Length: 397
Image 1 (tube, rainbow, N blue to C red):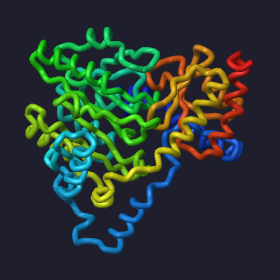
Image 2: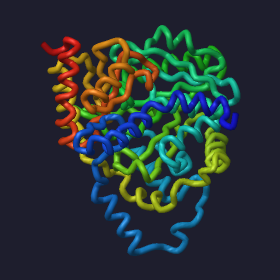
Image 3: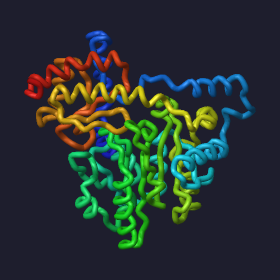
Image 4: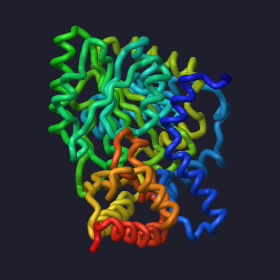
C-alpha cells in the first residue's frame, strides 16, 4: 500500500470535522448556501481587530530591509520579547525572550514540543473529550496516548488519572478553555493536578511536563480569569496561537513558552529550536511575527462571543437538551437525545440541514459539538432544525 498504516489510522480518526465541512460544501451547492446551516468547523467569521489591520498597513507602507527573509529559527528577538512581556503581565511569572519560540500556530507548537520531549514509547495523558488531532501530534513523535475519562462536568476523573500516571508518563496535555466543551480549568483544579504531578515526579524520579494547548485563553466569559499552568508547575510548556484571539486562523502564527525555572531549561529551548527546523517549519511566518509584535494585548471583542454563547445555550436548554454552559472558547457540547451520536448527527444533517460533529470525533459517544463562531443569522436559522429533532425524541413537549 502507498499510504502508511500510521497515516491511514490518523486519517480515520481525524476525518470527522473535515468530513462534515466538506459535506456542507456539497450540500450548499445542492440546496443553496442560505439553506444549509453549518455549525461544524471552528473557523471564526469575526473579522480581525482594527489594530491588526493597521499593523499590516504600517509594515506594508514602511517595510524594512530583509523583512521577508530568514531570521533565527526561534523567531525575531523583538517579537519573542513582546510575547514574554505580555505573558509576564498575565501570569506574574518573569519571562524573557529566552523562554519563547515563535511557532506555526498552536499545532506547530504542539508538534515541536512533543518532538523535543518524547522518546519512543513515552506516554502522554490526554483528557477525554479531546481535540482529535492530539492523537496524531503525539503519535507523530512515537509517543503513546493514554486517554483519561472526565466526569459529567468534563473535569478529570482523579482516580483514573492517578492510576494512569506511571514511570513512562512524560507529559499531561490539557486544553483550557476546552474544545469541544468550553470548560475552563479553575485554579483549584490546576493546583490539584500539579500537586499530583509533583508527587509522581518524586515517586518516579522523573519530570512530567504539563503541556497546555491554549489558543482560546483570551476568549473567556462571565468575568472569569484564565489561570496559566505557568503559575502552578515549573515543568510547564505553553503552546498557543493568535488564530482565535485575533481571528486569523489562516495566518498560522503562535508560540511556545517554557517556564523559566524548568529543569534543563536551556537544553529544552535548544531542543525546541532544533525541532522547529527539522520538522520543516524552519521559522514562524516572518511577516506575521512582525504584525503581532506590537499588538500582544489586543483581542477580538469577547462580548460578541458571549452573546452568541448565551443565545445558543439558552435555546438548547429551552429545547430540553442536557448541556453544560461553556465558560470559554466558542463550542458547545450537548448530549444527544439518542445513544448513537453518529446517527443523530446524520439525521440532523439530512432532514434539517444542520451540520454538527458527533462526539465520537472527540473520543466520547452520545454527544455532539456545535460552533457559535458564525453569524447571528446562521445561528438563528439553525434553531428550528434543532428544535424539531428535540421534539421528535421527546426532549421538548
